[in-house]
Image 1 (cartoon, rainbow, N blue to C red):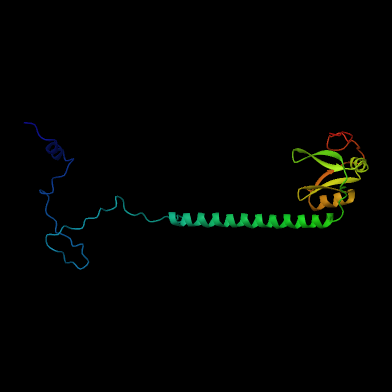
Image 2 (cartoon, rainbow, N blue to C red):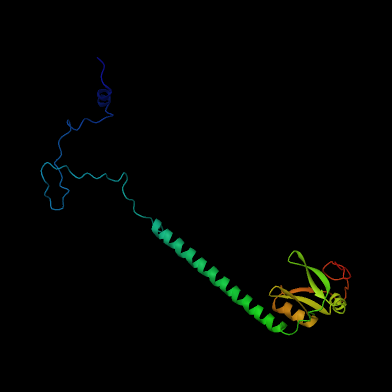
Length: 191
């Protein structure tokens, strides 16, 4: 009769003998008081597969890493918010200074019927001028400034002051030396 696999492993020394064949070990008390009720099974908690390794110098645990990341992200969000608020304050201040500069200085006429077209914000926009204002606008004596969504005709010096306050406010100011205009729209074109 052939030997079982267990017997073959025991003979070769690759396997240990069964617990019943091993010498009995004295029972250990897991209770802090040392008293264990007879007939009660022992509390057998599985032991960790590998022993706890001591931390290396400079190594941080996962909770600290998350806390550091959260605090740095919060600081970044707060910094971005402060910068956005600062930009908004500066923009509001520029808009107020521009409104104060342009107050009462707009030369838009209510009876203006001639549209003067110009490119602005990737679109063709228009401002209505009178027959007397059109050559002045094309000659560079007048400029167009945007304030609160409206296009205002102002004198050249006011237009340049508006550009100094906010570069985006100045929409059209023709070069007096180049009478054809900087906007590539012929000055005599009426649509």
